[in-house]
Every structure is written in C-alpha cells, then in structure tokens.
Image 1 (tube, one colour):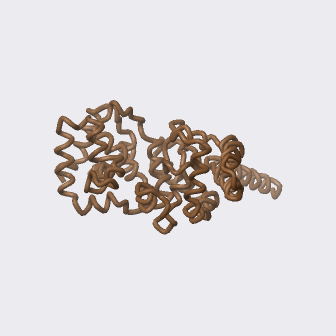
Image 2: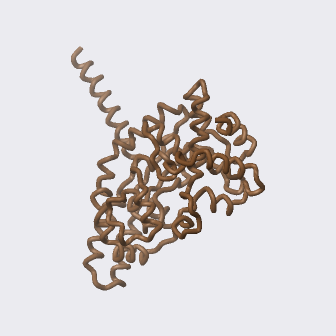
Image 3: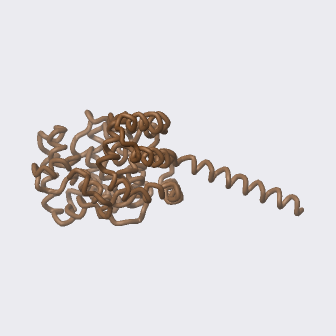
Length: 329
C-alpha cells in the first residue's frame, strides 16, 4: 500500500514538474544575458570597427529568434546597436537590473497566461520572447502565436536616466506602466482575429487596440492609468462626440486621417502638430468594450465576443459597436 502511494505521489510530482517545465519554455530570455555580456566587452573596446564586428558575431549571430524578428521588424544592424551602447549607456545602465530581473519574474507572466485560460476557453498559450533591440519598439505580435518584447524599452520608467533619449522615446518610456501590462496587452492581440489594415476603418482599429487594453486590465484586475486614458476621462464627452462624427464621415477609412487624429500619432504630439494627447483611439476602443461588457448578461461570453470581433468585416464591427450602447451612454 505504501509503495502504491509513493508511486502515485511520484507520478503526480513528475507530471507537475513536466507541466512547470513546459510553462517555463513559453518564456524566452536568453538574449538579455547575451546582450549584457557583449555590452561589457563593447564598452571596453576603443576601436568602433572591432566593437561593431563583436556585436555582429557575438550578439546578432548568436541571438535568439526574437532578436532576428525584432531586427527584421525594425531594420537595424550591428552598427545601430553600437551607437545605442555608446550614446545611451547611462540609460542602459539604469535599466540593467530591471532587464535582468525579467527571468526571475517568469511566474508573473505565467500567472497572466493561466488567468487568461480561466477567462477565455479558446485561449491558446503563446510564447513570450524577451530580447534587447536598438531602442525602436517595445513589443509586437510576431504572427506565429508569439510575442516579442523589446526589453530595453519595456523596462524603462520615468525614474530611468532618460536624458539621452529623443523626445519620442522619453515620452514612451515615461508612460510605461509595467511589463505585465505590456505582456497582457500583446497577449490579447495573439487571441484576436487578425485584421488586415486595408480592410479596417477608424472604428475597427480603435476597437482592436482598445480591446487589448481592456482585456489586459481585466486580467490584471487594474484600473487603466495610461496618459491617453487619463486625458480621455477628463474630456470624455468632447471626445465621444468627435469620434461619433468621425466614424460617420468620409474620412473613416482614410488611414492618414486615422493616424493623424486617433492612433499611433505620438510623434505628431511631440512635434507640436497636434495639441491633444496622442493615441486617444486606445481610450475610445477601451470605453466601447467596457460598455459592451457592462450591458452583457453573460460576462464570460462578453470577453469571448470582444476577442472574436471580425476586424475585416465592417458590418460585424458596426454590430458590436451598436450592441455596446456606447453612443447612447
């Protein structure tokens, strides 16, 4: 009897250990250690040609799939990383400890995974790939059910030494909430129906981004404090009126109009070309999803509905918007 109990106990432990190992394999952080190993060597090399070659051979050539992905996404080379290290070493040194803590924080990200699975039955576990890029993007959905995180941006905060950053990235880093929020936001994108930009209009693009914020906050049980949300709450009536006018206008499918006024327009804000807070489309999309969730009798189904919006079908998007009651609130 004792042998049988020990056998069962051992089997359970083995299964649990196997499950934990499988979960940990969903998080990739090898580029972070590799980057800092190369960084320390580069800082000590006076010759730029030798330093650039070292970055190429010891970091880019040996880096993970995530490094290749972010490099191809942003089109940077070893010389760009050299310039980053030389020009922004004070910033990099200020985030070094935070980047190295990412591996130790794996349990936090796995908890988000598990919470998502409890929330959404069709959830499929993606892979999170943390890398160190050339200070060009904080994170993106790779398209193969994996997320790439630019850890050199994602771990920066307003307390980091941001003096060497350009105005755009000073704002991006200062606005960072937490890596958990970024991860949860990108996780939501991996579960959405992929939409093609040419098929999407103002409403669908705002819903795609705003719903990812809404799901992220839902998973983390937090109140959104992004600057565009704080601004949006203060000017809710004005923004709602303007948004309703714009989705009924001839410009609703004009991508330049959308990007000038509602989404991905931080550089316009920094240059002074626009005076309102950028990325207000995230706030609007969030509020539409919040209205939809509030009116739903079945909350779990509401989450599934939000994740299953068909962004390529304007009629489907319009139906979701109408059912949310946002325009009537």
